[in-house]
Image 1 (cartoon, rainbow, N blue to C red):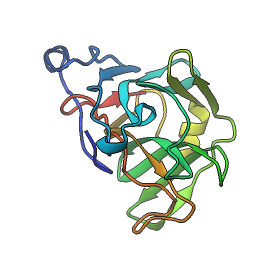
Image 2: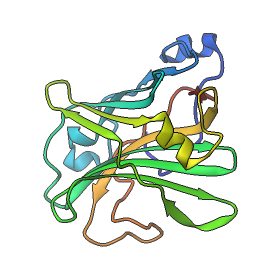
Image 3: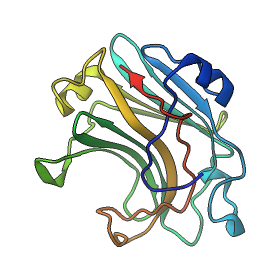
Image 4: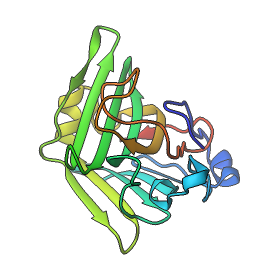
Length: 200
């Protein structure tokens, strides 16, 4: 599946089981995505093909994990690629993005935009921990609950996030039209089953 931003998820246990998600509990949400649906198909790149995603919380942290079909080098037609988690909380939209880029370098971005602030706010993720494991083709980003609360004072344990979406895409050396970063939606999108939300 691919789109830049989408609404998603599963609200009930029965729907979760039917559609292939992990039964939703506070602090836990997992789902699978079909293999081979990354775009563009002509230059099939398994690094952009999401196969599984999970969101979990521990007493100290929020953990986002995405498994790819095959982690590898960026396509030669681009400078790199990104792995991105979008979600909303209240009236604000949040973005967590991991980038691997030959020009701009690797990095982690945590951003926020709400109705009261027309520009995107860079929140910082200095204490976030990133793990890229080629053996399991998995990317794991861990943010402390303190980092989450710094993004929004009510974004604490027990808070519910929604409009969740995970996607991949290519990176370029100049920002693409309509974006604030040199990325695109040319990759894969893996929303959780219909209507899913996640409770920290």
